[in-house]
Amino acid sequence: MLAPTLIKETLATREQSLVAVAEGTDYAVITRKAINAVGGMKRFVKPGDVVVVKPNMGWDRSVELAANTHPLVVRAVVEECLAAGAKKVKVFDNTCNDSRRCYVSSGIESALKGIKGVECKHIETERFKKVTLNGSFLKEWELYDEVLSADVYINVPVAKHHGLSKLTLGLKNIMGIMGGTRGYIHRNLDVALADVNAQVKKHLTIIDATRILTAHGPQGGNIADVKVLNKVIASTDTVAADAYATTLFGMKPSDIPVTVTAYKRGLGEMNLEKIKIVKA
Image 1 (cartoon, rainbow, N blue to C red):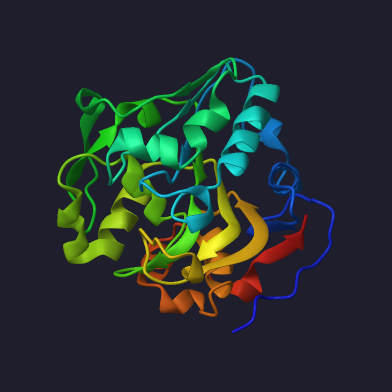
Image 2: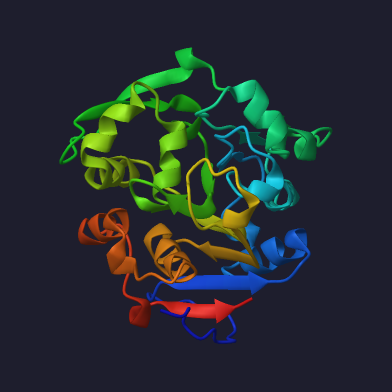
């Protein structure tokens, strides 16, 4: 299935889910274009806010291998938050490989170095707090308190293949704020992820599709599995953002159980014909 045709349109207030797609080789520029097309960062971040920007930097992989969010995309998001007046921007991930190596190999730590008002620090396990979810599968789970206490939470995943869930996009990126024995949720992954996503509000989701990992995800490791698309996607509706991003892999939103479960839970729109897709 080919990606839906992009439509140029001025931003207007509407109930319909809006997904903005920007394309180009300057990743900072296209990230800003995507953000502006959904209302601009000042729509989400107010002066004095504490903001969490949550990329995927869970793997000890270099930038070109597409296992982690591109550092230039992350930096542009952070800079937009600061320009909107954020008091502090916190960037972190509960990594799968050794965090010290992941933060360096991903390029994100160095991309943010020296920017005033930014914390790019490693997860502190004592900051996980047990939260009542009352979900269909997870009744409670340990979530990172800096996300729970933030004024704004911005979700910045990379688009890539996943051996179990087929793809990992915005909805699955929430695993990076989960503590405990995360392997347990793979027993009923799509329902567990919907349980957590229903509890934690994401104000904005920005999907890095500058280069996507098409096979052997989520860790990858072979440049032959990487496809360069030079795209960034933004939406206030994570389900809609994921639905569009799925088409970049030649699949339909209905092919991805995590997307379907979240849609059925009322967490967003997955029907592409009901989503306004605009070119930023």
